[in-house]
Image (cartoon, rainbow, N blue to C red):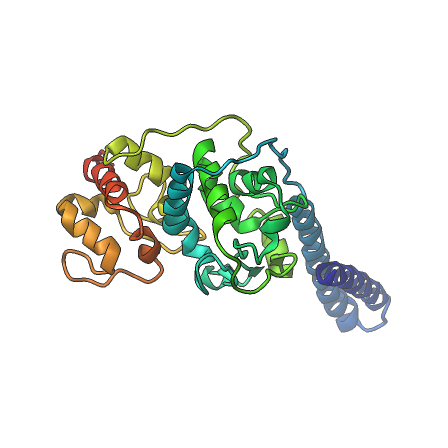
Length: 316
């Protein structure tokens, strides 16, 4: 509602400036006729452009959709254990700032531009997911669309949708099993402000990840390069470290991460210790912008798998 009022205000300002420019053009004073009318016309065009981009941003904001899969998850000890692994090592980076999966953290604080507010949802039964079906939760993880069909901006930017179908079901089973905690999630959790809508309309924000409709599978868990590649497919390492993990590039939304070829100079024990302590093998503190605390909650096999992939990835 607030953005609609802002859009209407921009349109009104553009119209008022255009009318003022028209009046100035008919002034007997040459200065007012040429200078005033010209300036007012430019300002009117700027306001109209901002209004147009805001409208385009609103259209894009409501343009994401995906079907709800017809699934019902049956929890097993194996599924719960795998779900906890993923929740600790992936979901917790955003959703556990205030407690285990209790949400409440505004992810906009991590962004380079003040484009709005994006509050991580409370994933415990104290949050909205207690009213969602398993299929609705699956859709939110896979395609960044909530139970009401709204675009979950930050979820659509991350790579959690590349989790296999079985791993998403494991996450659903696990979050269904944890006790309620924390505070309710704001409704809606995402609020893109006027600047965000203008940037979205102008194509200045990264595109959301493509909608995935087919089956997604994953390799068997183990300390292998293949499983490490899979983990890095759904983790957000590439959002900071670049698509080839050779370092972030200017213009990306997330912080610029270093070239991960540096891991080739580390031993496995040093890599695991770095992910668990935040201190790399050279004694340097890893930036707090790197979610090493959640990554470090992965078990030894998962961390060894990541290390195997990074230590043997081709030089670019």
